[in-house]
Image (cartoon, rainbow, N blue to C red; front, side):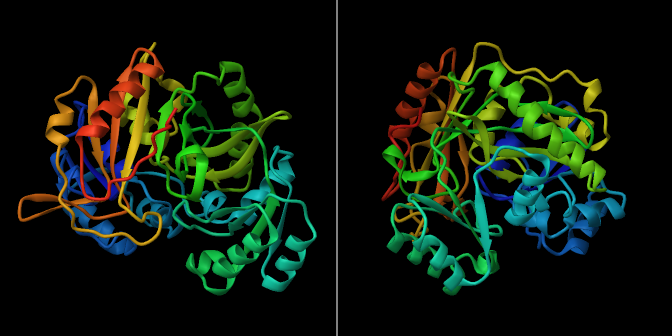
Length: 418
C-alpha cells in the first residue's frame, strides 16, 4: 500500500519512520516533509490546503491511505473532501475536529457533558475582557479561541501581563483570526499530562500516558512553545487514573460527537491537569501530538498501519494494540535561538550520524532541510533526540548524551525533561 503523510514536523517524521517498518507499506510520500522524512520516503511539494490537488495526487499515485498531521489541514475539511472522493484517510472530519479548532465549541461540549475543566468566560470585545481581567484573582489563563500552533496560551501572573496578552491576541492579531475570540479561564494547579486515544467513531483505545514540557525554559519558565520534550509513559500516572480519564473524558466526548452526527475517527488528545480534585481537561486536540508522537513510536509494538486502518474502517475493537513492556521513551527537542520568537534559518547541523550510532538513539527531524547536500536548520523546533530504556532515567540519560553530540549555532534545549 502506498501512504501519503501530510505535514513537515517531527511528528510526521516519527510517523513515517514507524510506518516504514510495516511489511504492508509499499511506498511513503510526505507532503512537504523535511530532510529526515526523505530517508523514509519521497518528499513532495503539494498545496495541502487545496483539496483537489491532494485528491488528484492520491489517485495518480494510487495512495491507499492518507495520514494527516497538522491541525489546520484537519480544520480545512480535507478529510471530508477525501472521503467524498472515496480515498481512505486517517483523521477526523472538519466537524469532528471542531473540538480542537474552536475552544468555544470544546468548552460548551464539556459543560454540557459535565466533563471536569477549568471555569472560563469567552470574549469577543477587548475592553470587556480587560474589565473581567481587572476584577479577578491571578494567575489567569488567556487563550486564543482558534488554532495558534500550540502557542496561543498565555499564563498571566498579574493584570498588566493579561492586558498585554489580550492586546497581542485581539488587537495586534499575533495569532491571526484565532484571536477573534479569547477565553479567560482559571489557572489549574497540578501535574499536566498528555492523553492520546485511537478512535474509530465508536471505540477508543488509550495510549500509555505521556508528558510534554511546553515552556521554552527550564522550570516551566518563559512563553509556551509547540513542545520542548516528552516522556512516555509517565511513572506517576497509574492505570486507574488513565481509566478514569477514559471513562470521564474520552468516551463521553466520543459518544456525544457520534450522537451529533460527527463521528470522530483519528486521535483524540485531551491535555489533562491532574489536580487535587481529580483530572481536569485543559484543551482538546484532534491529532497526534508533537513531540509526544516521537516518544510514542519508540515504544509502540503493534504495526501502526494496522491500527490506522482499523480506525478508518471502524474495526478498532477487533485489534489488540500492544506496547513494549518495561520500556520508557524520552524525546528532547533542539530549537533555534530565539524560538518561539524570531529565529535564524540556514545554519549547518552536525553530529546526527554520530548520535544515531549510540545505543537506542533515533533523531527525528522537524525544522531541517538539505541545501547543496548540507543539512541546515529551517524552523524553530529543529530536531527531536529520542531514546528508550528499561526505566525512564535510563532513557533520559541516553537522550541527553546524544543531545551533546548534535549541534548547530544557537542550539537551545531544556535540561530538565523528566
